[in-house]
Length: 278
Length: 70
Image 1: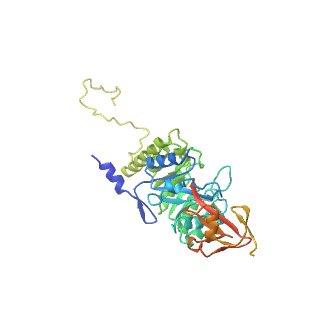
Image 2: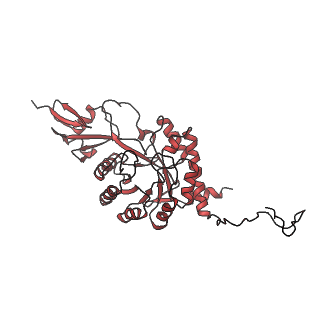
Image 3: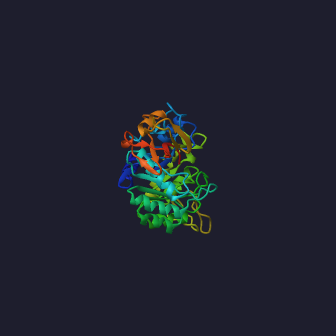
């Protein structure tokens, strides 16, 4: 009986016209080494992996393996990001370099931060960068606050996906405002992915149950005691949450219990006024 | 005969004894064959131009690679 697997396979995440089987996107930072990076990402089943762009250490890395040898672009969709950028200008420059680095690849993750303590997105700069990048032909997946109006503005500017935070980057605090996420999911047409704040598998499942199109995470896997095992757990959580969303949960009935077993045929039938069995 | 050139490479001052192309620069830095991208004074230098584009005195050059990040 492999019906659930079939459903998952058919239920593709479509970003910028391209289908992906996995709705889990992962970062590549904070791992002990490239081998752990490779094994955890393999276990997660992620097809889209995000990478940072940094100055090369001149004269210090001859012969060292590079990240893109461990995660070859032939196998993974590499999603260059602008982590660490605090202005629209720096983000745009970084992604132009990324496009050159990846042979014209257009799909990018835009993230413009507001301050070094919170890493909260600077939305005016994010919107400005998105406008420039879309005009230059980039396919922009934008990390953003969970403000429904600003999320909508990113969609209106032509972003191919909008990625509100669940909580602060790397905090592992889970989904702090499901109501805002729900409004964004309901009102946007482009895919909405929760990006940042996931701490454990249930957080990812809740995001997917809300109706998110996907989840992007890094620290929750990389800083688990066993990152490879957590990669696998997140794969299951995202799939389970998605299936539950598609299945449609039962209605909540806060003031009414409902027995799962027949009420008749008991060997000791309840008399009027006595409690009924569950 | 040709004068040395001074550039700022990845934020640090660097001097070369003579003018050179970007291909020669990449070789000089032992980065040949690596997947990288180059920016000069805020503009991309496409890899297809490495052979003929020349590093000029005073250039601010960035050489970047992909690294782990979220």
